[in-house]
Figure 1 (cartoon, helix red, strand yellow):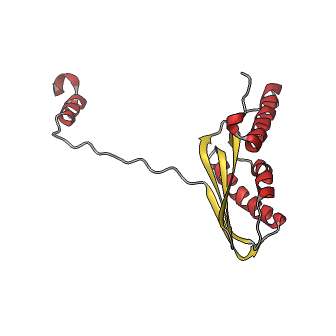
Figure 2 (figure 1 turned 180 degrees about the horizontal axis):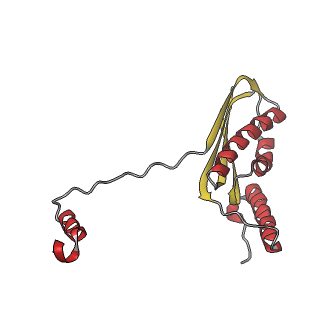
Figure 3 (figure 1 turned 45 degrees about the vertical axis):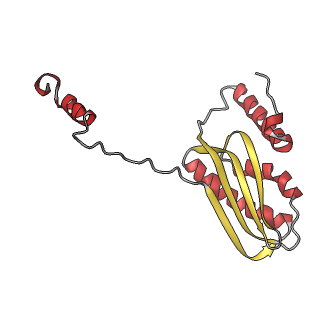
Length: 169
């Protein structure tokens, strides 16, 4: 068989009969796109929390952009001194790696957050990470229109819930 069909056939037969080992290489875990910041003193002003979120978002989104990936959801964990952890989330209609868009979508959840004695720990994590294909917006206006629709769906989905938003197709 080896002379007629080659050594690959005999190797495959030996592996199928269990005479040779078949090495298994485990897949590595996907990288986690997250950033954390712990402050020495608690902060309670909304402007201070937005500044922390801006630094975290620029770090996470910078790594996402390097990997040419975008996230459909971000989770911000705020550790308050008195009440423990608060988890805020923002979703996106398209994979996003823009820090300004992340800040814009967290504006509403942050306004509802009530902190009495301050918060000293913050963590921003990206989830549902997908590859991003860049598109040229100068040639076709439909790309710009689709981006506007995606922004509208993102904002509405974060306000009233993505399960309540439908798009006409």
